[in-house]
Image 1 (cartoon, one colour):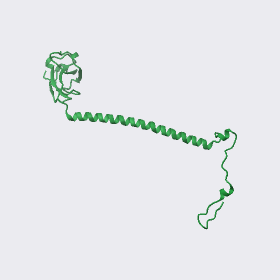
Image 2: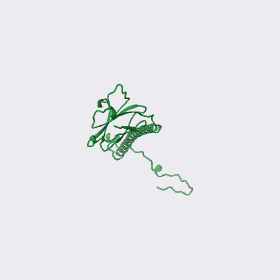
Image 3: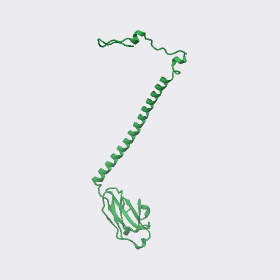
Image 4: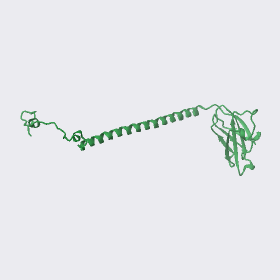
Length: 185
């Protein structure tokens, strides 16, 4: 059939096949499986782990999310038919490139950072709610105590609140700061 596998990396490979006249109104099935051993495996569709469907108008496909340093078998058939040996190719993925490994680490670090940020925001919101709730309760209690004498312990006993008494001389007295200063009432 003339299937070729090109541009192989640690995680991807491109498969190219010639168009088949019998598949003009249908689709192509791209089936692949890791750790393939020709002695133990057959070419039945059941033995493949993954299958992708590609429109009949295309004659290439990039297989992604492959495992580095792994042997794969890849078959291209028309309409999910069982493949024959001439419709399959065996290939090996390369070692993982350092750029994609560092991207994976960056994505992991970003995920951890975002998760911890969300948790900190939740904790801050809970603390802010608690502080505002306490502040509002104190303010409400202070306003109720200042405007309502009926709730005071003196009103419950039928007595009035006793204010400190000052003599007239204490209330109207002053200490002159300057020699000529006069105290007034």
